[in-house]
Image 1 (cartoon, rainbow, N blue to C red):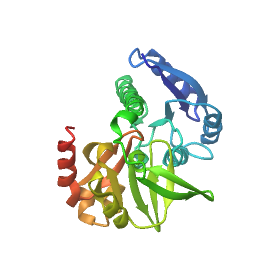
Image 2 (image 1 turned 180 degrees about the vertical axis):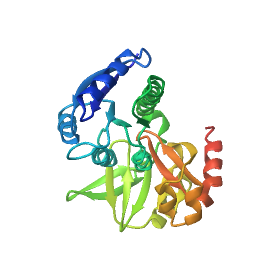
Image 3 (image 1 turned 90 degrees about the vertical axis):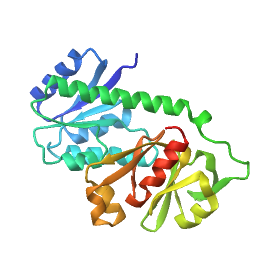
Amino acid sequence: MTVLRVLIVDDEPLARLRLRGLVEAIAEPRCEVLAEAATGSQAAAWLRDHACDLVLLDVQMPGADGLQLADGLAQRAVAGQSAPMIVFVTAHAMHALRAFELDAIDYLTKPVRRERLQAALARSAQRLAERSAALARVPAEAPSAPEHDFITLTDRGRLRRVPVSEVLYFKAELKYVTLRTASESHVLDGALSELEQRLGERFLRIHRNALVARWAVRELERHAPTHFGDLDGEGAESADSWAVRVVHVDEWLAVSRRQVAAVREALAGLGR
């Protein structure tokens, strides 16, 4: 059975002590508290040299706060580096929306109830299991591609070829396009429209700024109003936001309202 490795970050010693006691008293899922930190800076320093699965993170702390730490971890994930999951544990509910924009597993308010903490830990353990299973399925799920089917790009002055079969999605951001695989992110020149024409039916346009490999779409879900709606530039959509979850990186990408039906059809065709 997998043990969830936990880092507790809170500037109050008594709060850390109580949270550790709650975590260690929960029998399922099994958890191990690896370390504690009193500030976001201490936590970041620990995470540079150690790995964990989950950070139980306070928001308001001296110096770098919890949201800044979570944002830094999110940037690591975008760059293709491993990053732990986040559950915010705070006395303030005002930051909940920002927390979920950072893909937090949950947002718990103090005093933390054991039942709510256990539910958050269970979701974290489930996502960890999904990540492990997804990585184990990469060779089987990713469709084979012809030997010549590559995306050529420049990486630190070197030319590289990335097999199209390894690409999870392309996302347009400002004046460039990000190519995402299970382990790396790369920046490309060009336009999504050109990629869409070249790659054909293997990739699904889910948004004006994103193409996703059909095989990599895991699920479609309605989300509460977030930055998803803002990405599309359609005010009406912010009240009815949809997103797809992408395998291997476990990320959520916005789906335009006009593309929801097409994504549903694609999932149905894949038997999901």
